[in-house]
Image (cartoon, rainbow, N blue to C red; front, side, top):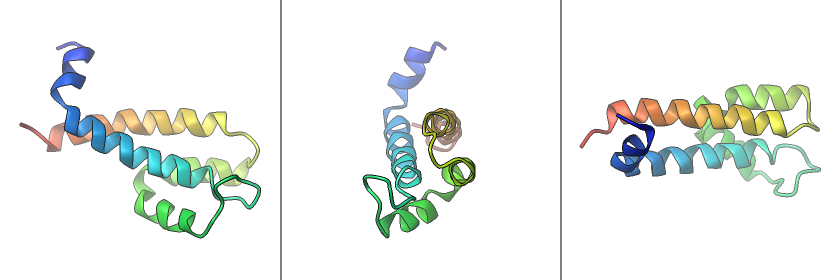
Length: 91
């Protein structure tokens, strides 16, 4: 099965994974007061998306200035989340 067929057949899984990881990415990028979307909501976003943001949050805590590694980590978490949800959500 090719990647294109895999994604087309699993649209719901793709949508859930995309929304879940996107909320986590936005929350990780809004942790520090200098961030554009800083607010109390980021704590709730991090708690809600804890499984996919724990590594990114640790990296962000260590290096607050660099966001590119955060996006790379979150992309990998998106792929992992998609593949795991693919197993649980079947037609």
